[in-house]
Length: 112
Image (cartoon, rainbow, N blue to C red; front, side, top):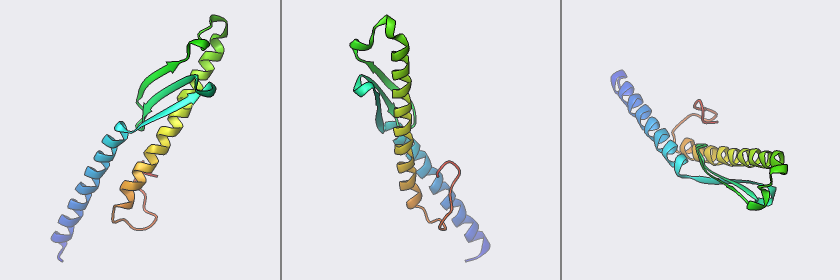
């Protein structure tokens, strides 16, 4: 294989990796996770990419005197959703990375 063929092969590999990364990003936005707090009284649905899809608050929590507790529960549910989104994202990126012909220990930026 001459240098030109090697460069062409490297370019094709790079394009293939870019396509797989783009496909993974699209999949991440379609994977849904749910963060909860307060024993399920507050629920946040998000994509694995971190886009918030919905917020659900049980009526029993809507008490003006307990506003601070409700705000804390919403923050906790967001953090739970974010952690689950990160886990789903990492799992998806591991799938992409495991299918690539890379040297052991090689990590792409943002993939590990």
